[in-house]
Amino acid sequence: MSNHLDAIYTGDPEEFAGSYLKYVQSLLGRVNPAEVADFIRILLAARERSATVFFIGNGGSAATASHFANDIAIGTNDYANPFRVISLTDNAAVMTAIGNDYGFEEIFVRQLRVLGKNGDVVVGISASGNSPNLVKAFEYASSAGITTFAITAFDGGRLKEIADSGFHVPTGPKEYGPAEDVHMILDHLVGAYLMRFVKNG
Image 1 (cartoon, rainbow, N blue to C red):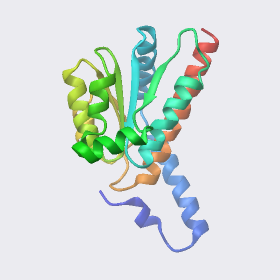
Image 2: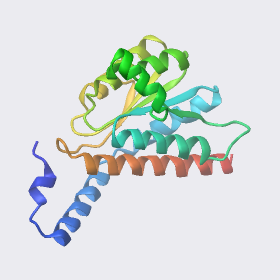
Image 3: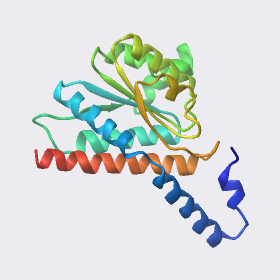
């Protein structure tokens, strides 16, 4: 599969903008609403059993992980029966200590070994689905009774294969921008639903 962004580039910024937006719209048209609903049900079930949901990702996906944690844990504004959501990308001291002492592939799995417990959920965000530190975290989670949910793009990679379930954006290879655009729409869609679910609960 070729990179669609290379194909639409002509040098004209307005033309590129229009083509980029049309492409993202086409990707949204291919999103499976059932995958979104499945994700929402996983989050609601975790809330009911007071389980913790951990978000992990690298680069732009690390920022998305932080955004998810904010929108679900705080944005839902429920303190009596909260969504216990943590982004494992947010502690620079912890990540750099683990990366320095044990290697970058360990930065999430070692946090899960400390914080995770049976019945928790880990959500991995990766366009390629092949980030070694996410794959390693998912492999550990599966052995520890922690549910795994993959948010992916491209062909989904290894993460999509080993996850219990997931949300996939079918982009071409290395189309990070459109992939992460749709991942952020998922964040806002899910957050909007959960906020209203709590409010009307």
